[in-house]
Length: 379
Ligand SMILES: Nc1ncnc2c1ncn2[C@@H]1O[C@H](COP(=O)(O)OP(=O)(O)OP(=O)(O)O)[C@@H](O)[C@H]1O
Image (cartoon, rainbow, N blue to C red):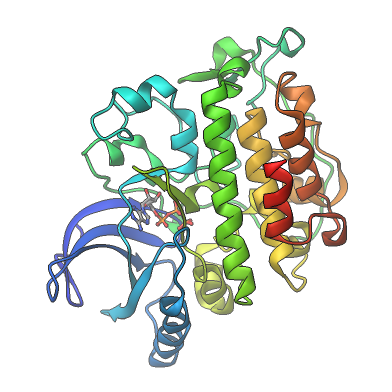
């Protein structure tokens, strides 16, 4: 059961939950405004010192203001658990926004609410369970390949479309639900990954020609440009997102993109207890090599994550895919991903070039700023 009241907010419904906690639609009883309230529950309840640090961190975020960055209103502590009040976005996460066909978008009452939940297996962003490597099917040469949505199966259960179909969400994956081993010692070479034929894929499939629909590509490009604007803004303020992934990007009814959850990863990374409990700081699949290695990060690490997102949304599968964090890390650090255009023969060559340059292993070899990426995407 969700709490009825959190600080000055009355909880109205559960919007979803992820590795760090649960997000509620809530009413600010002081102003009668609705907000999205994220209650963190990944670690032990905060002590007074950690609570003060949270307040300091989020005071900084609350000062930021950009049309593509979700507005943070305030933070607080509810029975020892930190919470964050932010702008309520009526919309979809980037992945669902791009999974939908143009018809879906146009035929729904508010333009973004899907008709019904899709039968898609959803796992956490760092779930390496069975099927995590099953995304690409045969017959790519013909341009007729189909991709199971398992290719996108890195979303938390909170992302189930039910939460947008008026049903709200209960449950979801708790941090304790992660069973992946994230220690970095004793890397073993990955066993060959079995690939199932497309017919065994469950749920909706996206064909390559669906991925390339001009309308979808237009939306993808436009969303990427807006993410670049958001990144340019936060990097300009000396901040790094650290956990950029499709579930942290929302698109509202006016197709305006909002970058979410930034700043949170740093707070959680700095809190060893929370980090160990949740294992969710920087989702592995989107993490830059330097982040995996625990090296200092700058804006270029976010650009790497942006490249993974672009690669995945263009090709139907992530550049590196593995069943365990060890395997994934080895691939990220040592191997080259297949060319996007080998997976999607008719993909946009310019976007493919941008994606590949963003996911270069050395930060110096990538685009250096979000502004540069914006320009390259606009060419
Ligand atoms: N500001 C918001 N407005 C509307 N819905 C939101 C907002 N923030 C989050 N949500 C919804 O709540 C869901 C859960 O968000 P949350 O940030 O807890 O999880 P996540 O980003 O999927 O995972 P993680 O916490 O591991 O990064 C999101 O997928 C989204 O559907």
